[in-house]
Length: 397
Image 1: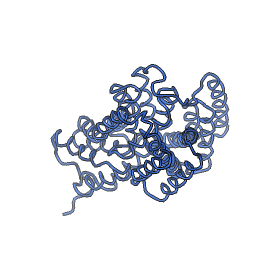
Image 2: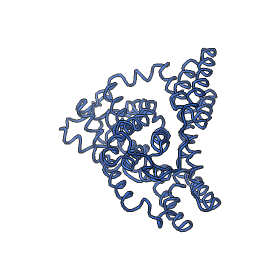
Image 3: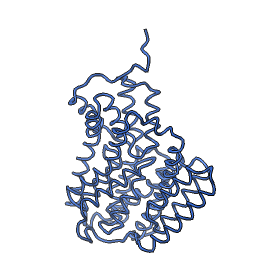
Image 4: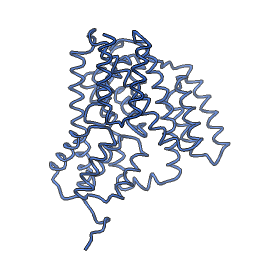
């Protein structure tokens, strides 16, 4: 007699066993979200039969629409299937804990032995150039999935321009979401666009967020609440991939003069080689800016939405996202996020180019890295970063 896929369920595990299972996943979480999701699918769907393949695919589709790192959200959801909300909490913590601890150690080593060392300037610059290329490739990859029609392209371009003009982040996100949700009412869309332009002009006159090239700790240490909010923005607006958290965490740290772009990019590079969701770069940023407490604050902010969406909406995730109006609203917001991160990549590239002793050599390294990023899968990012470090050390030191 064949067991129906609808009757599949997780085995009965103790809370300790559940935590250790997902802790193991965390230690093996190399290669970015695609590799992480494949690992979870192989273990829990193909081998242990916690859930049917078709339902896993539906859940993955839901996680890709909602903000947050998909692999982590899947772990929380699967943990809840096994042992309820406490199981979801333990599964999520287990998956993120190895990367969090390793990033804390890396940030401590960076500050103690690497930051400010003149002999390593070229090496770090090479890494930063490669990271810029990887981010630009990520923008293209995310955009190819998100920008499905002409209107979404127009919204992304509008958000791109608004970001370059230093518009507050919430204006293009809200406007693009509402415009796309109301596509069948073009006059309403035009009115929303007009209000958004007016709001951007008014708020833009009071706000200057052009990232300064300053030293670490150029200002007094920020309040932990500000670092938590910086992480929370990134966690709430991570649509389509962890790279989309970069502009929001950067705006609230680099944009306030708490650390320079180069150090921020070093954190992104470290996140790319550790077994963890890429958003773990927030831990590095928080540590450099605010020490151990700062690292905890940013990390908590980034991962809180991933826990919340899965734990609060556990029984309603698929139904919520299948709501047409909500789906279109989120699609519009995601298009705006693509535009924002595209603008951020341009700003970061400009800052990095200004720090290069030879622009044409930096350009050659960048083009080689961009071509390599285009022709390889994300799991090869650590190799590209290592190549950038070697190249930078050889030509800039």
